[in-house]
Length: 432
Image (cartoon, rainbow, N blue to C red; front, top):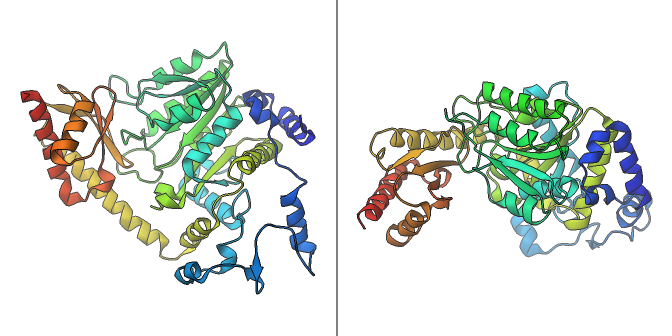
């Protein structure tokens, strides 16, 4: 094993033997090189005053070489903020600004010990880093039956984790903390579990209320007290889009520093929060009481980044940073939030009108981009195909009876017609 990896492992073991035991073999072996092109280039950047012939970019006239056909369209930005490689951890100022944003939006983080966010190539990349560092073949990866299908690829196919599901809702249509606890305690013999907590939930658009959130935290604490080392991951892809009475902050805050056997990881990003899906700017942040453990995990994260994408895109980091610092940012974001909230409220009013109750129910939703119908008499895939072929309406079939509707991409004026059309589709299938 590389001596740098050994040093990082020793730091983690000294600070927390539990966290060390959570690492995959790759997680133990990975490290970020202190010697090599990046470190030598960084040294040269501060000392090479005559000529700097280190990093693999081209300069012209003292600025990064570029094409006018590109720069003319991006002339509001300096070439230095667009064309050079971004640091593997991301632009330092962007990381600081995002951390400040986290503290503002999740008050329960106050007084907690957590690291500086590291920039990822959006949310999926952040989750894949978690999988690489912590998921070993056969490790339990626990998440509800209503889930984003990419979890299976990221944790199951890529890392051969054992995927463990539990019903998202209990009989009262509240978050099923008892099911989560059962799934966790079933891992006592293994002594380790990775838990994925995705709120607002994709596909249902559900975020727990305050009591439910406390129950989730208590569930993870109980598992830790029972001897299970828990990697608790908050997938906060749709963070901030809270339309009704639910928690309005990330569970990362309540889970941070919860128990010596709990390592909390936040994966989030500008992708949906700031409506910049194609920019691919995300973040991964660790919470632990030991600063040396945090540092070592961050170095291992940089090793994963260096070994895969090397670094994230520089222009989109600049664009996001510029937006976060803009005086108009909060007002513009609130305007878009109100549009999204209006669509969600409209959907709920339509569904509660009594027009469709004989053909479907719907799962609770109060946030995010989506809601999910629970079909009574027709199959979800049959309905999806019929709607697409006869009416030109696209939906997502999930399992036997669940149909996901992304109200985020439908103007409020079109929502009633959308559900009327889905209803017609159901009636068509019932009469055939």
